[in-house]
Length: 273
Image 1 (cartoon, rainbow, N blue to C red):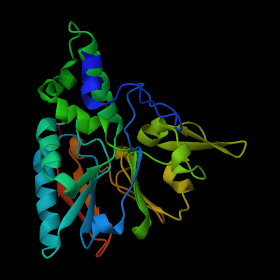
Image 2 (image 1 turned 30 degrees about the vertical axis):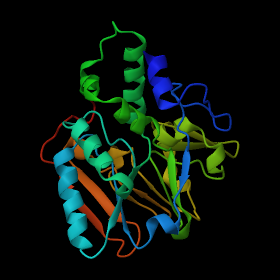
Image 3 (image 1 turned 90 degrees about the vertical axis):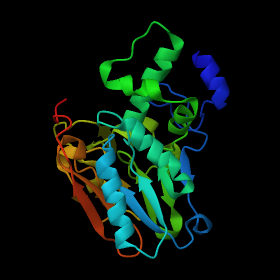
Image 4 (image 1 turned 180 degrees about the horizontal axis):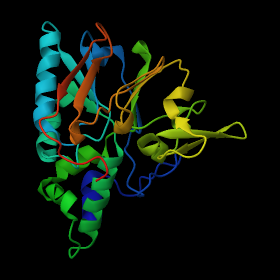
């Protein structure tokens, strides 16, 4: 069944030779690093939203706030990944984002990859039972799966000099040479022998990766709810832990640069779950 799915999605025999494979050896997106030009943006306001994790009600409220803050503008919503999983309404979030068509873009996060891993395991083995936390994915259509598989790892807007990524970017390494796994999982960097060593967890001598980023592009990212909102000279971390009872945060990347947030309606998961 997995082969059938890959065939339907045009994903068979399409490894990316240029960049290392992702953690779960999933099919790579056709466009791993997406560039957005002015013709696509036009005069839209760009509003970038932190990790949603299936918090559909909060997402709807935040998007309405953004529309109220830019009443005379069409808004292009961008997401830093982890739009689904762990939270209460992943299918609804995915459906909403897909319904926006070209008015919504997202990068791939580690939770999109985890869900895709489970989906493909299930398709390969009809006796495989999805773990409880992934049961929501049984409601996904082939088109939903294709959408998740084709999410790029980065979105760049050269005219506005910013990049969206889920976790982080190794300084001094071009996007075309970044390791996929780092892009969705890195939180910290340790410097060893003048080299940057990425890790998902804090290690002795490590620091949050964004402290090492000196531009020139501004990076919008998520993936680090424990640190909350991160505001650095060339990087903005937008994971403010809505899933854990915190907030869902977004920022206008052009125009007003205004930050907006909504409080979580519940603590859907404990931070250590």
